[in-house]
Image 1 (tube, rainbow, N blue to C red):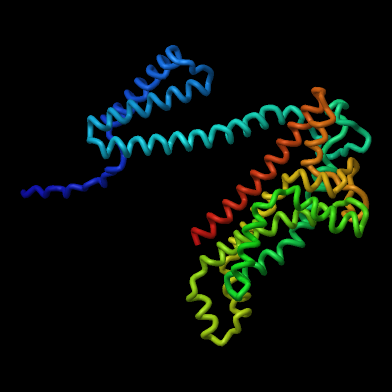
Image 2 (cartoon, rainbow, N blue to C red):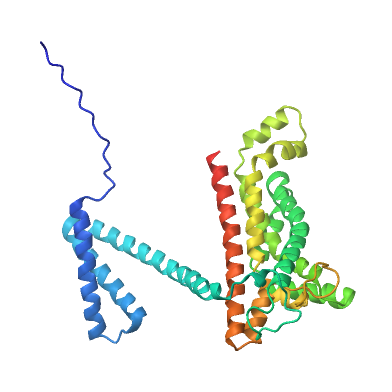
Amino acid sequence: MTMTSQPTVLKPGRPWEPTAKERGQKLLNFLISLALSVILLFTTGLNGKLGWVIAFFISFLSVTFIAEFRRAGRPAAQDSILTSISRFAIFLAIIPIVSILLTVISKGWRGLHWGLFTQDMAEATVNDPIQNGGMLAAISGTTIMVGIALIISLPISILTALYLTEIKGKFARPVRFLVQAMSGVPSIVAGLFILSSIVYPLTGQRNGLMGGMALAILMIPTVARTAEEVLLLIPNDLREAGLALGATQWRTVAMVVVPAVKSGLITAIILGVARVIGETAPIILVSGGGEANNLNPVSGPMGSIPYYVWKSFLLGGTEESTQRTWAGLLVLLVWVLLLFTIARYISSRSQKR
């Protein structure tokens, strides 16, 4: 009776993963760096949390360089230095973001209550008990003004992006330059422009429509630039196929190009909304900052979340006003994060397709 040997199944290796010895060396480097940073704190003028971070960074770079130099020579040591600096830069970038999130959440949730979303500040002040008054006027006003900004900026932004990517006329370069320049315009300039060109000489009143127009000026460059980048990702083969079938240029754009980047355009719109939803300076200048819930954008002042936060902080000074400030910041932060999450989800779905 003959015995048949089973074929050996080779498991795929993962050479990019560190070995147990390399993990141990990294842990040893970390512990030595930690000890050296403590010594530096006691022997130099460094103190506090920032001083410890600087001391640990210097110690870790030195220890890592020496360890890698002994193990694999100078090139590996230089690579380790660059890798450590990159990781430290990422760490420094994450610290303020995490700190802001934790601070706003820890202080903002105390001011949350049901009346915050169902009452306005028409019969309450920022120093009243937190149960009196709420953000209804601010939330509805922000929604209306952002909606007005979308109605104004969306066709302008999309048509501008189509002009830059599809028509490519002789004014394409100056138009692209203007769009890029508008991205760096301070938000208060948009408010002053609406105030000096429309409010003072024409209407004479500050309302939600003026606030929406100011936000539209800030939204146009964000949506236009993002939409342009999305349209540039479409291969020319699709455009040429549409033209080869006898379609006109604009029919090809409407029936082929735009449907292909629909999810990308939605992402551009969401990013544009997230860009302007927290703007404070132009809203304070041109919307009037109403306390009562006002759903008519052309009649009377209109509140907003940034105005609610600004007024609670400026006119307060009590524990109640501070709670209102942090609660308003929390609502605004959650709103912005939700918009970015939706944009990221839509973008990831389009990439999978």
